[in-house]
Length: 228
Image (cartoon, rainbow, N blue to C red):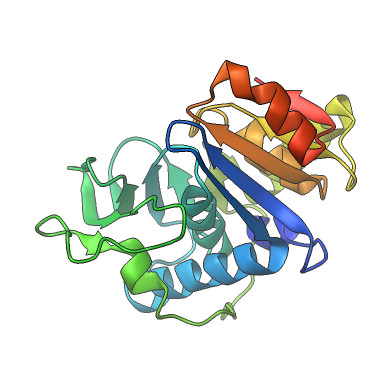
């Protein structure tokens, strides 16, 4: 079973990721079902359009955002190894980013409502949202992703899941937990995304956090835990 399938086992209607960008003043909430659909679209696009296979390196050079979560979950679902440096088959970058070591560069719009780049695609790059949204909402892998497949930060699927379960137990996370995090990605992905979802908990991710607003976010979202 892939890492993504383990992370998306909650009830479909359950809120999974709520994303705030305090600088932009935006809030978007995505359920398990919605994130699963975006992850499936991403996995289908990577496999059918870009020929990604288990073990291929996919660079994710994006900030903490729900689109980044969709990219990560899609890459893991099709068995890709997510990296943040070095050569990669595909690299996901922000609109102002670049990835000289990648065979293919995909630009994520990072629009809170999921709008694409609306034609403003850098030369030689692909519009991730515009392209991936055309693919199916279900991903059916031809073969299961083995547990010893490289997955994240040099670790295999089994190693990541074991580490996440241990960390979730240390932090006391349960399926009833609602975790507010201001951790930056990709550095904070293990604690701030994988560990939270592995426990069946939901995540409130605050990007460009305004310290004056954090107490209000905690009250509004009824969070149980905080990661900073």
